[in-house]
Length: 189
Image (cartoon, rainbow, N blue to C red):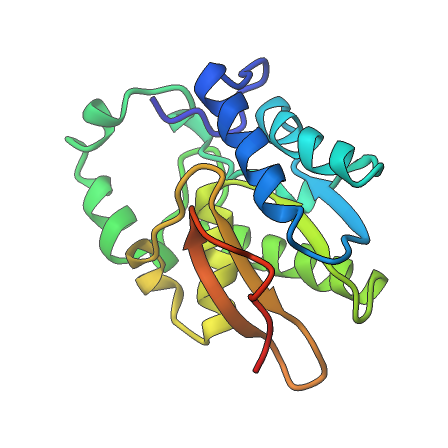
């Protein structure tokens, strides 16, 4: 199913375990200044153990929302894959708008704007942002200087960690889709 922005979707037991595990991995960071999450229930539930471990509150940020899949929200992926538009979603996403929803380009503009605003509020700080796979892939593509049409080649797994350092010289992608290992050593060289 393509959940999109559907409300009322909560983490299953596996998701809660993954959220606890990523919170434990993030303990390796010497400091976390803030935790932001998409306002959807499942992302706030993922962010909660991270924030709790740092005695912080989760700040909801609409810029971190999942793509608005419009009429495709809630539909089965196997059904959507049969549509002629599916090929465009995979091969030419910059030219696609979901029926009664958002385009990938609008999503990328939104997520990169949200990330930039958070970075500006916490200069030199460490901030955890909890979002969804497609917006994260779009933000990574932007940080890498990769065209949006190639963002489907980036893999973002549930509760994976992607680290991007933002500074006056532009973004530096430190890791993508990390699901195991020590995060304490992740820093610009």
